[in-house]
Image (tube, rainbow, N blue to C red; front, side):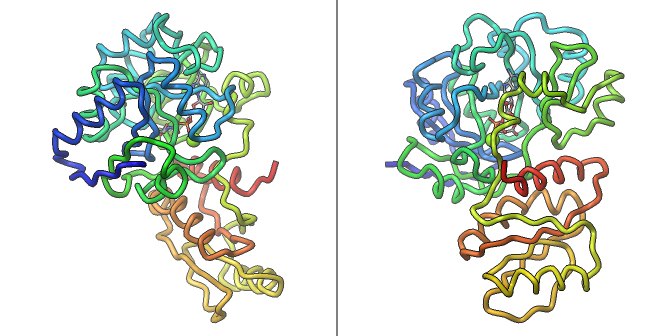
Length: 333
Ligand code: TXA
Ligand code: MG
């Protein structure tokens, strides 16, 4: 049985937070909202509890987890050798959607880091998450709360869909604000390296700490093992249409529609009237896409479409993180 508790995201009931915190302290699993996507949390210092996360998600054991903290003090229990660049970034971006890879502290459960000498840490900008961390009085390891390989959850209903019955509790704080995952920055190499693009952009990071690398070579990809696993994929095949005028998109849609039911996600409304055509129109900014893209992919899966055509957006600023996720969804490797 998975207990779902609906909470006011600004002022969550403390009795519910306390109950969730005691589940964490007892080695259980609690899904909670962050500003990016929902996370599936367990006590980061308890190896057996962390193991349950991998089991519930069907996550490969070589894909390490992000440790969430509520304040700077808690970071001391998680990481060592916190350098000046880390301090600058923490000051500027925490709480917020930036994950820092640092040297691992000795008390963090081994399975969190999947055998690596490093640990990924972040302070989420979400009241429910921060209250839960404070009440639990322990760092919380939390990957996105989806079944491994599925699009990340931006609503509690997505967590129920993937993990209902496999976890102890879900704190429902409504839709998440940003909608795609945090930027992962490795600070154990020089210059620091973006392992996963996210809402905090390369430009913002460079402005704060100078030179930052972003092209992950195969060596770096080995260091962030999650990056080689299939990710963010709905059941349907995803086809990207770059930019595209309305006429071009309609032509592509009609071509696939001859074979099967299809879905369309984009910022241009398409006038195809067919019971096998399902269209979800979003705003045209990176923000609009980020907020709704995973929910849209899941909704079209529920409509049992065979192909999902997605209109791309400009790869500028936050748009590059959105396009990174879309390209992964579209790749079948
Ligand atoms: O926004 C987010 O980051 C969300 C919320 C819940 O905080 N979490 C999330 O976690 O997206 P997950 O597990 O889905 O993605 C974690 C990413 C993976 O790409 C993983 O390989 C990388 O962080 N990672 C974790 N620990 C690492 C480490 N020690 N070194 C390199 N990469 C690491
Ligand atoms: Mg994930």
